[in-house]
Length: 226
Image 1 (cartoon, rainbow, N blue to C red):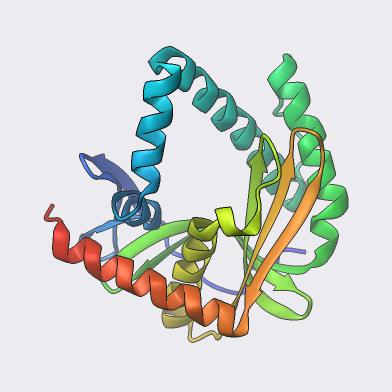
Image 2 (image 1 turned 60 degrees about the vertical axis):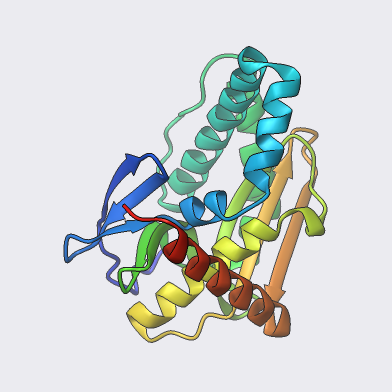
């Protein structure tokens, strides 16, 4: 299924006070898409409020649990698409949950993908930003930026604007780097109750989120120095 159609670069990642940065082929330090969104967003304030409410110990536990599940699911899907039959799940309740969520995505989500150009691909645009896209492939006959998401509960579409902004950022970088015309983003989400949901933006909705992304990117570069 993986065609390796494009020659994606390998970028080094570093962290600083603002968040994750990438070093581009010309040795420029450029912010990741998530660093831009995390610093130009109300989400950081909401997370701080939640952390203050539940306490640092509980907040760290919940976030580590989510990260561990998400990492196992992503690696499992990557291995499956690469034809690698390795058991990467831990032998505990989180590992068992991650295995079930992976199997749900494989059975319900991957059937929507007819071709894969790359997995965990690095994308960078003109000293402005960079990032790692889960998957670039084809859904419903259209080249698509594809993101696999795990969640405690399936989120409402109006709650996941940042996912769409991230996908549009990756699409725009890909289009400039490889002269493509990607204008569709798919978020393929599974929750711990093994409910699956596919969110897709395209057309005018894709343009809407692309414009918002560009404004946030400009605000970030005008607000911060590194």
